[in-house]
Amino acid sequence: MIRRLLKSLLSLVSPQQCACCGCRLGIDESAICTICDINMPRRQDHLNPMDNSTARLFWGIAKIERCASWIDYESHTSCAKAIYALKYGNRPDIGFALGQLVADEMQPTGFFDGIDCIVPLPLHRKRQRERGYNQSREFALGLCSVLHIDLCDDAVERLRNTKSQASLVHGERSTNIKDAFGVVRPEALNGKHVLMVDDIVTTGATLSECIKAINKDTDARVSILTIGRAKH
Image (cartoon, rainbow, N blue to C red; front, side, top):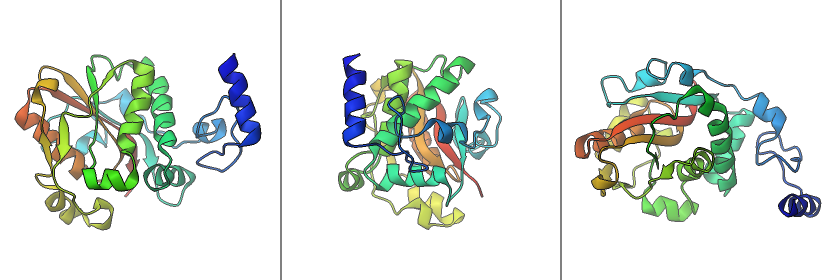
């Protein structure tokens, strides 16, 4: 009751805006308004998590159990505006809010059943210092807050500060990211079912390279969840 009152007072003094449409948020809304949430271009990957168009990106490349992207991602849309603010606009709260939305929506379908820990795709230390946070970790924290699954963000590291994948064509992405990840605490993952999370998957090259490192150095089983799947 007190928290709700404080939030109401704060919204009067400093109104919060929806990261998608810019409209004022209600006191029960966080980062994304209800209308924009309803209108998100949802995929149905989680209903067939072993065989969908996102999962097929990893077939024959990285060994995975399940795979899903929550929405279709397309540039110059309201969804893209929110993701851009999450990555470059100092808005970690967007990642946390999206994690809560996705967890609430997908948990009843059984997608998270048997998951032992959630591993955010790591950023290189230099890039994380520049940004101030890892957007995938914020998304993971939102998931964890609803699912009550442990966060494991210190078992895998990004060893090289690679070029941005967004600036590269398909053939260059795999070369750019090769051997960029390493498992530094295999004991934290051994014997577990790990959910690897990221913001947007395009070709799957970055996630594949990270998962290959996990497959190589541990006996963990790995599943994948991303906020969005880029439309080609």
